Amino acid sequence: MIFLGAAGLAASFAALFLGAAWIRPFFYLPVWASTLLVLSGLNKRVSGRSLLQDDPASFLRMAAVSTPFWLFFEAFNVRLADWAYQDLPSPLGFRWLGYALAFATVLPAILETASLLEHALFRGKEKPDAGFPLGVQRGSTALGVAFLFLPLLWPKVFFGLVWGFLFLLIEPLLAREAPERSWMRALLSGNTGRFKALLLSGLVCGLLWELFNYWAGAKWVYTVPWPKGPKLFEMPWLGYLGFPPFALECASFHAWFELRWADAGPGQRWTAAAVLALMSLAAFWAVDAFTVRSLVPL
Image (tube, rainbow, N blue to C red; front, side):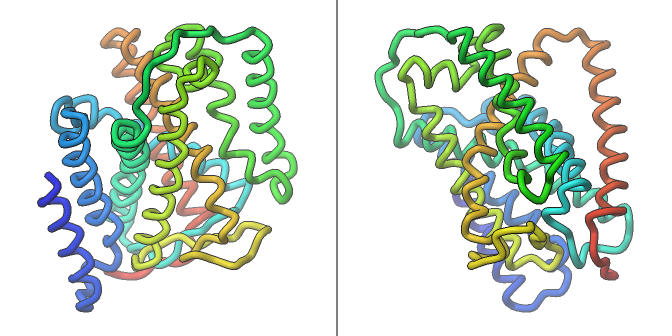
């Protein structure tokens, strides 16, 4: 897996730098697919387990739900107007397929990287569960509600809070219903490995996202009200502070989704899949209508 992913990365960058026109609109897809193969191989080597290799059904489910997960933030961006896309392929079918495949890499990238970092750097002796105090639960929920609505009410001031509200709302639920899935409950018990791995994973993936985007033909640019610079790739330096809490949101959402999926019957699962698919199509339309700046022919 490591060799295959590294070969894919090398081939993608080689094609780009050699001027192959066909790869520019789609560059982001092969480089992230190749990166996920590398991560899978490293996880297998370090921990003896890779979700992609050992449980491909769960990996595909993670990738599938990653698309509507990220589209939730695209819906937020209609109000926030913090980023825009330019030079996307003009044929709608290619463009929407590109959305689905690109956004499907978000959760796998964060969680596979976090798993690798946790096993490689942050493994330690587990401390006993110390519980999740009611006051912390209520405080987290209250902050989550504030972080959810403040960016919608005053987006020019509070736009950055969108990268924190989701885990603040979900973690109290996980701590009560499935404590073994809650990184916040583990953190309160002194088990900091998962928390540290997620924060570092967010920063690592953020750098990769911005690096790959910088060289891509179809790309995003930032329109945040502040700060304007200095920049590393397209992102202002201070903007990288949003990636670590976003990784916490990814972990919380995925744990909550897997909990709900495990509890659901076949009919409920098919219904949820259909609803998420329809919502994703509506969100694709919204991205085209409000966030895309320019289209280019293939």
